[in-house]
Image 1 (cartoon, rainbow, N blue to C red):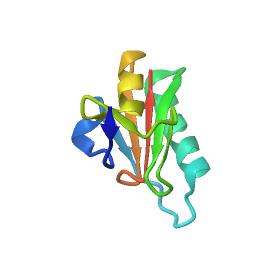
Image 2: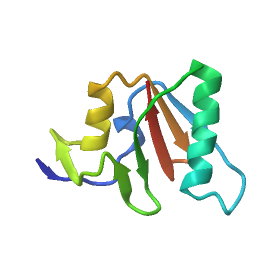
Image 3: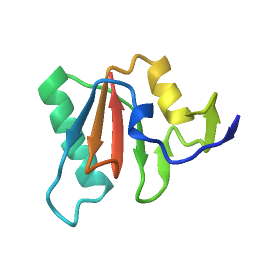
Image 4: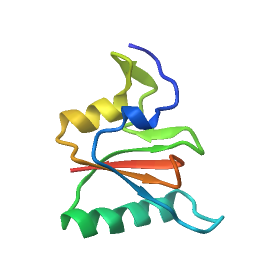
Length: 98
């Protein structure tokens, strides 16, 4: 394992859907709600597997390592059936669902 850089769009599991929230006050909770609304529209009953908050540098599951060059929160989601990524506000917040 090694330290990880900020994830890039090409690291995200496909399909990745972009959501733009047009307000300056959109914090993590605002982004999470927007991501869930879009995931529910596309999937019906989504289950959130992992997320990344670029603004605060936090993630879930909380781990600051890479596995084979991939952030562990992405590897975790892929290992648990990820099939939808929601990118809110051009990478400010990323949510991965199944």
